[in-house]
Amino acid sequence: NAGVTQTPKFQVLKTGQSMTLQCAQDMNHEYMSWYRQDPGMGLRLIHYSVGAGITDQGEVPNGYNVSRSTTEDFPLRLLSAAPSQTSVYFCASSYLTSGSGEQFFGPGTRLTVL
Amino acid sequence: LAKTTQPISMDSYEGQEVNITCSHNNIATNDYITWYQQFPSQGPRFIIQGYKTKVTNEVASLFIPADRKSSTLSLPRVSLSDTAVYYCLVGDLYSSASKIIFGSGTRLSIRP
Image (cartoon, rainbow over all chains, first blue to last red; front, side, top):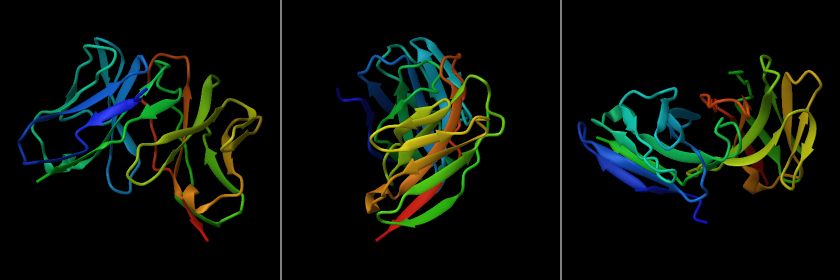
């Protein structure tokens, strides 16, 4: 099993550009989530999903969109990048749909917005 | 969701036992306590999870008193590689999905 994979590993954007961060898992987990982590800070939940076709907002959803068309994939879209979105983004998945069970994290995407 | 409070940082030496305490005064009846470890430039990694009393695995032990308002993660005989940030979370395993809150964690530094 590859676990949770994320692409790209690094990305530099200009203000106003849009892009999609990819996340995939091969563990057949229903729960998937996106977090951002700013330097020296903890993780903050952006969006989460409890299954295909079901998504909900987390703590800091503004400026981000998600969709879940398959169990495996949970892409995160930045609509119009801003410098405040410079961060490391982690995707995670979990067998339990509460999200409180063990979460498996991807390696992260380091995003810089100029 | 129950909020957790942890020390911002802790220092220790190789070979020592390290105990990190987490306070969760408003923990709900069905909440479990979960600890994660995060190394620099990596995603968090699950360490241990428990509901009451004591849980032990090959990496750590988790001690939970009867009132469950706090918990202690115990790392036996730490090494330099245990230098990381440790997060304590509480949540109901079997409820509908909720917003998982990681908090700022405890930055553990191990010295030779």
